[in-house]
Image (cartoon, rainbow, N blue to C red):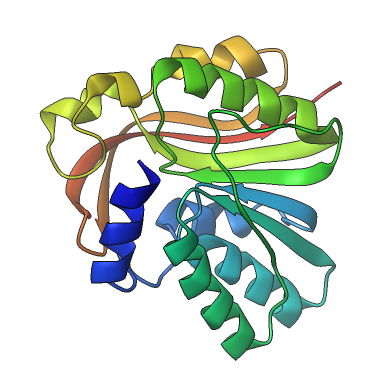
Length: 206
């Protein structure tokens, strides 16, 4: 699987464009995403670079750890971060076997990070374990309805999300924003057009 992603990123720089996901931009206007932040399945880093630059411009503390399966994507991100003078901790992580440390991060970001159903559950539980009390889990994912739209994301429905799988893990936390419906996305070559997403900004209560 890592070879597949390495080939894609090697063939096309900025595979999903350079702009941050629109929901990340919108939610960052409502919630100050500060402190130690984990971004998983972050690819070439368009979202974490946006958040880091925003924090720098507005003068609040921010540090980031980025996990991705593709070392090619991480190399692209490393070059971009260096050019912008942004320090990031980059890790080549296979999320199917990831080790999650307890209460380590103030925020966790996941934008279109898609895995098989078993891994989805492990990752969601791991994220909740790794967040501090009061920390935020923020992201946008394709729902299982996306299989009908054919405008991006996995072609195997098992890799798409049922909103209930997120609520099973975070249902007792504060759902600041939880939205399941259509959106329009234009993100590089692979996310193009009307799609069906799950958006969330969840504050963990431990």
